[in-house]
Image (tube, rainbow, N blue to C red):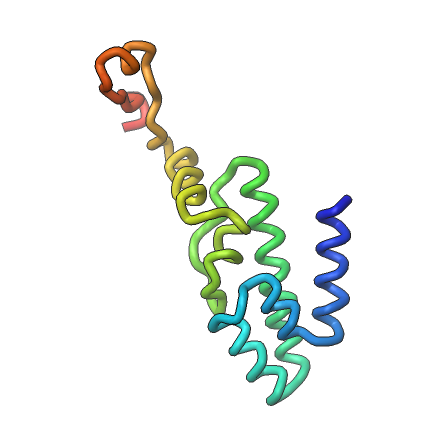
Length: 123
């Protein structure tokens, strides 16, 4: 329920002032500055860019919650928070390894001799 309220509030903010919604998702980085310039030049492109960023963020956030890799880079989005769906870079890298079958698995013997084993069927 809280996630739905957060998404609805971001949508309302994006309708009235898109740079603030983008700043809430991306911080005051390149994406927000681009949205500010779009807002000053023409309001409609700023709204489109703001909704593009928020839709991408929530779609990727849903993937991360399901334990899947959020995806690679997208055009016109440079924020790691949006690209990773709110996950850290380390968590996104772990999900990528898991999805591609490169996740390390530990044997019960690995605790005794300190050796990690990689599952050979995925190599």
